[in-house]
Amino acid sequence: MDKLVVEGGVALNGEVRISGAKNCALPLMAATLIASGKHGFSNVPRLRDIKTMGSLLAHMGAVCEHETDYEIDTSDIHTLTAPYELVKTMRASVLVLGPMLARYRRARVSLPGGCAIGARPINLHLKALEQMGVDIVLEHGYVVGEARRLRGAEIRFEQVTVTGTENIMMAACLADGVTVLKNAAREPEVVALADYLRLMGAQIEGEGADEITITGVGELRPSRCEVIPDRIEAGTYLVAAAITGGSLRLTGLRHEHVRTVLEKLVDAGVSIEIGEGFVDVRGNGRVCSVNVETQPYPGFPTDMQAQFMALMAVGDGVSLIKERIFENRFMHVLELERMGADIELDGRTAMVRGVKKLSGAPVMATDLRASASLVLGALAAEGTTEINRIYHLDRGYEAIEKKLSAVGARIRRVSGRGE
Ligand code: EPU
Image (cartoon, rainbow, N blue to C red; front, side, top):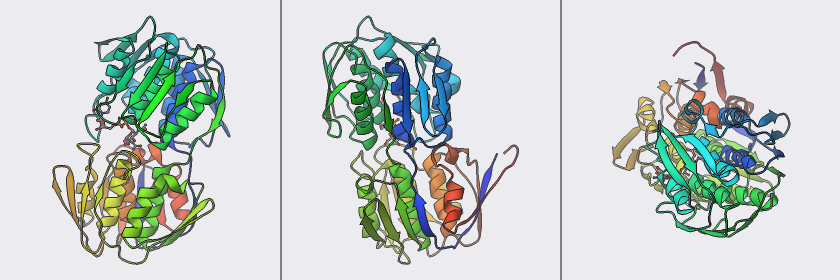
C-alpha cells in the first residue's frame, strides 16, 4: 500500500488549479445509460472512483475511453446488473439504478452495505421508485427492480439525499407523466445533472431549489457537457493555505459553490479575495476558533467537516463542530489526536480545543475526507507525518501530492507492499 510522507511547517505559496468534481462526473456517467449512443464529458478528474464507475459501465456493455475527454458509448448494453464487487468499493454505483429502470424497466444492483462514515442505506431511493410503480425485491444481497411502466409521482424525501435525488430525477425522465420531487437536494452537482439531462432532451424544472418537476418524455439522445469544478477539493486547498499560514491562488473553481466555507474562513481570520476566475486565500497566523454545523447545500458541507476540524485543531480557542448529515463521520478524530489535537466527542458534536502546534506522527486514513484532514494536519505539524492507506485519497483528490508539492509542500508518495 502506498503512503504519503509529509514534512510539515512550510507555508504554501503559489497557484492551484481545481479539477472537475468527482460527485458531478459520477452521476453524469451513470446518466449515459438512459440514452443509447456516444456521450462525452470534458474536465473529468482522473480518480479511482471514476475508474470504478467506468468498470461498472463496461461490465454492462458500455465502451468507455478516458483520453482528453471521457467518451462513453452505450449502444450495446447487455447486462443490467451492478455486481457486489464494484458496488462495495463505491456506494455511488447505486446511481445506475434510476437510469437502468428508466430505459430498460429492469435493474439488479447490489446493496451497498455499510461504509466508514455510517450505515448510509438506500431506503429513500427504493421507496421513491416504488411510488413510481417499480416492484422492488431484495434477493441474495441485490435490489431487483422491475416495472412494466414507470409512472410520474409526487415524492417527498423524508431526508435530503443527494444521490437519491439524482437517481429519481433520472428515473423520472422517461416515466409517464409528471414527477415532483419535494425536499430535493440542492447541491450544484444535482443542478449539473439536470442541465445534462435537459441537453439530452429531458424536461426538468426547479433544480437548485427544493422542489424539482420532471415531465417524462419518450426518449433521450446522447450529448456532451463539461463537469463542474470540485467544490470540496477547492475547500480543501483553501484550508491548506489557512492552516500553513500560506498564500494560494485557486483557479478553475466557482466561488459561489464554496460560499459557506469562505464565510467560515473569513470568520476564522483568513483573508479571502475573490476575482474573475480565481480566489486568493491567505493565512494570517493562528486562526480564530469558530463553530461549524454541517447541513445540506447551501449549508456547510459534511464533505468539508474533517478538513475544517484539522484547521480548528490549531485554532486559538474552542470550536464546536456538529455533524448533522452522517452519524459516524468522526473517524479522523482519533488520528488527529495522535498528532496532538485535543478533541472531545459527544454524540454528533466534537469539541475542539485548539493547540499551538500539531506534531508529526504515523496515522491511518479511514475514508476520503478523513484522509484529507490528515494531510492538512500534517502540512501544519512539526516534524514528519506518515499517512497510511492513502488509496482513500486517490478515490477523490486528483494528483494531490503533485499539486501540493508544486506550491512548496514537502510531500512524497512512498509505494509499499502489504499494509
Ligand atoms: N440516507 C438514508 N436513506 C437513503 C439515502 C440517504 O437514510 O436512502 C441518509 C444517509 O445515511 C445520510 C443522509 O441521508 O445520513 C444523506 O446522505 P445522501 O444520500 O445525501 O449521501 P449520498 O448521496 O450517498 C453524496 C456524496 C457524498 C456526500 C453526501 C452528502 C456522491 C457520489 N456522494 O452521498 O460524498 O458526503 O452526498 O453531501 O455524490 C465524498 O465525496 O466523500 C462523499 C462521501
